[in-house]
Image 1 (cartoon, protein in one colour):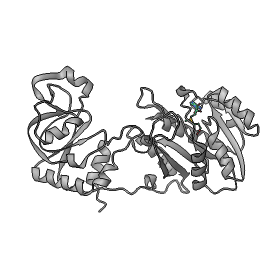
Image 2: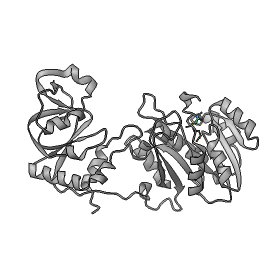
Image 3: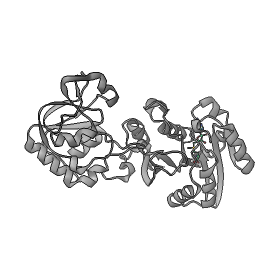
Image 4: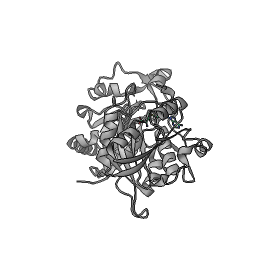
Length: 359
Ligand SMILES: C[S@@+](CC[C@H](N)C(=O)[O-])C[C@H]1O[C@@H](n2cnc3c(N)ncnc32)[C@H](O)[C@@H]1O
């Protein structure tokens, strides 16, 4: 397995199950633009009666092996992200590819980059690695039947991929097929989902609800401000100052609620994230605990770590009303924390939920 190429293949049973669940075709051209050992293509052969398989992969060894086992498939060793490489590949020059169905489980790994440069229908944008492959595949093959994609969970909800999602949604409906556990892929730990991307009959029609998910929210009427900490733990010691203000990381939230701040680090920092007054503090990263969600009145400033968010209110009564709303809807609130690895909440997901009324 070549880890640099993200060769984490789809388990055959899962591949067959999600294709069977999503499509009922007698015959079909199926295309996997990063086909690896061909597990998605093989699964399509088991599900549909008459199948023409088309596959690309950057790894020539993988493609050579796959050709030996499946001489009737059209396979090319090509780099999906390189236009010249794709142009020269037999697998992209066949007739009727636009009649095909895409089956995607692209590379997910970011290495050190949160986002990479992507290009879709004449637009330059930033997107995650996985989303870059999805955009490229849809642009290259323009499949009339759309496709099924295994994606890291962050592709569905992250701010990084917000622009790309919007572009895809202009022409497609996107529906969640299933969520996968983080140990689905041998050797990799990533929370992922399977989504069905289907071209809209009328692209001018209004966008479908992303993931068919209903928008939810609790309609908080009181004004509030969100304060996001910007000082990471690794840098907090550099800002240590006995005369400074308490530095509150996620692990200090319980002590803060108990007013036990003696052992807490004090900092003097220019970074954002200072807060005082009537507040509710929430973890930005990790999983929220209901017992730690509490309206408190901070008599003096504290400095939030980059893993903590603060909601600042005008009065403690307003903060208490917000605490009640969050606790009454805690199961829904927890679902705002998402992510391929560690779960996290984005500012837009939080404010959207607090502002929108679905009750
Ligand atoms: C996560 S694996 C999935 C393989 C297969 N689709 C499956 O579901 O089992 C990703 C595959 O993408 C291939 N790959 C990585 N970078 C690529 C690129 N730029 N162009 C084409 N294939 C690439 C890797 O060699 C690997 O086989």
